[in-house]
Image (cartoon, rainbow, N blue to C red):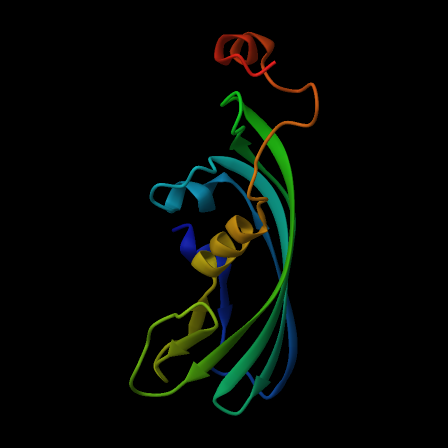
Length: 148
């Protein structure tokens, strides 16, 4: 199954109301993104959708961890991530691009692919400075670069 399709929610045929979807995110999502510095991780994603007329409002919660390179020693380490965000889905003819806040869908689309939104949200949840907890860096690399 294509990685992106694993993170799709149905929109066509849903009646107005509340829906909840859950996803397990793993390495296949990060591998599907070009130039991703994240190669591995495990996150739980919960999507609450309020479907109204030709639109839907999503509240997204992501929690888990990813493996990222340490900015000091370049060794991978486990970084916990947590993200809460909102996304609007608008269904209409015309513009069909994603702008980070609104996902535009055609009336012919049966589902909304959230894969890229989930990936971007995980990246946004990462701290600016990504370093091992104190004492976790590779001592040989730290000595080599003179960071002691």
